[in-house]
Amino acid sequence: MVNLDDAAFQQLVNDALDSLPSVQAKSIANVAILYEYEPTPEQRVNLELREDQTLFGLYEGVPLSQRQGQTRIFPDKITVFKGPLERASSDVHQLKENIRHTLWHEIGHYYGLDHDKIRELEK
Image: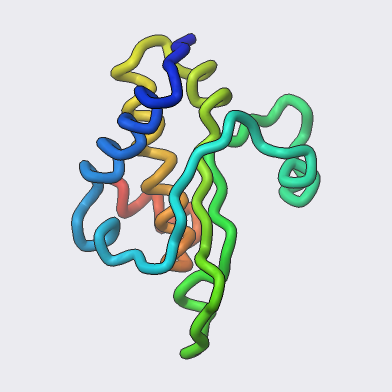
């Protein structure tokens, strides 16, 4: 388990975002990327997560593929969950990779990709 202070964790999130393929990561617009310590009970219920399931990140919004020309007033949101990511990582290098993977996954949802397509593009 890794335990970083907030500033160090935020820096890892920033570094991970900078390391993603520029076409996908730099083209997102009107998306807040932030972190929280843990998913809320409401988020867990809405996702129908069991007690033994972990959530590293969450995209909340309307995927680009479903907007049909609509403009949104409120930004979409990608949340990275610090606690689960730290607990799943044995060192800072693994934490950085886990954050990068989580951001890539949630950005994929922003574009309207399903899990299979996200995994395919990640290779």
